[in-house]
Length: 606
Figure (tube, one colour):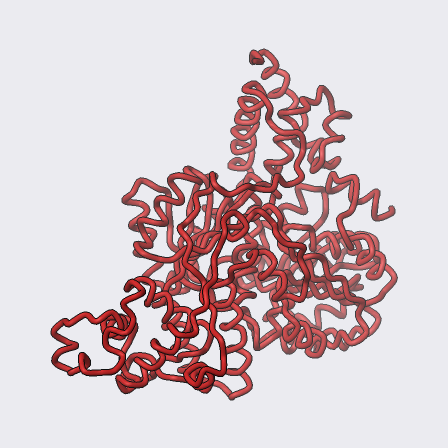
């Protein structure tokens, strides 16, 4: 069977997306490939179809133990024989899987890297033909990345024993440094490279100044995404618990997720998020990699992510179905201070710190950007974007910049004259000439910088210090003495050798004020009858998914239900023309959905 026929028969799609067919052809021919595609555009098809065509079993190495079962179940619903092996199974269950694999009953086998590296599993690999090695989330091999897994460093020790088996490494996030690591450590020197655009046109990017974060989050969810699923990222476990509890008290369905929970609780909460339609997960970075839920409508960051890669990866969990979604982030001076301090206190060699410093500066530069957010984000990954995108906050309002050289000199001089040991609040009081008790007791009212900054408000001076810190023109003290200190970059500014420009902090925009780009989508729900039918089909899908113990999107994606409600197929032949419905799903679920559509025809139209 040809790739095009498999795509239609098992997955219900008529055409391949960018690079998919080229990758598939390379792997079928026995060649290696490196695939960099954004989340939600179909990386998995690049190894699933070759696994069905090549002789043997496609071996997929994935760190996502909690999601293997759902991935396998989704393949089975499509009529593909798939299995998984990981530590969640009993010895008896694992032995049954191994027997099915050796007897040729499986086309695809998912394994965790820890299982792959065990001696017993490597002996098992000798007992059956291997079609390919698919290394998913390949960025985990890089120590510079945000998801580093030491086990990934040893994967090539196993694949080296099978020189005739093609390898495909896949990731959604990798800058130039991480890509070099992937090629070197997975020994993919001669692999063909396939890099798709990083652009997720359906995601609207917004960065707001943090004031009252819980109230800001509540207003955002309540006004823009009521009852819709989303992910809220925070920095610590305690904060995840506190925010989730607070949202619950505001009447929202929310749960926390972090590494401090026991494995059973984490699995249960992740499964609830996948299966429920309107649950919000408040999480640390422990939650997320490989989340397959297509209808996440927003990803909110209450704290800064670890890097641009982390930000792209985490925001990419929104809108995998191609429908409009939001990447919404709060940002403050205290966040910058915390991130700078964490970096300076981190362990590791100077080269590691240097790279991490560059990554942090890129992230802070993105937050302070006056140009198109999408242009800045894609530019970090080496992709040029023809701004404006008109689907971010900066493209929907004029963000002014001003010559801040004199203000920067005043701010830096104040840091120096106070002994490089005070933070923004005290320094701001000095600059505006505030004669409070602390300033008087320290005799800081006698400094030359006292009262020299009355032309700016306290909020404006806090913005100046935030931007100086973000740009590396200030750093934070480590240890008992808190506050700011000058850097090597500070002195050219103080000497008048370097001009400084600051961003005028804009007012926050609501979703209604942002002109969205309408993503490509199937015929939409243009009348009340279609909308009512869509909700009826969603209820039917939910009933089926509960009986089968799988997430609703494993049955059909929302986009497929939308097409059903709009086109109203009358028989199996018409049903198979809808994107996302392959032969197996039409056979399993077709009669039930056709009946629901037929009984829905009596709904009056406008």
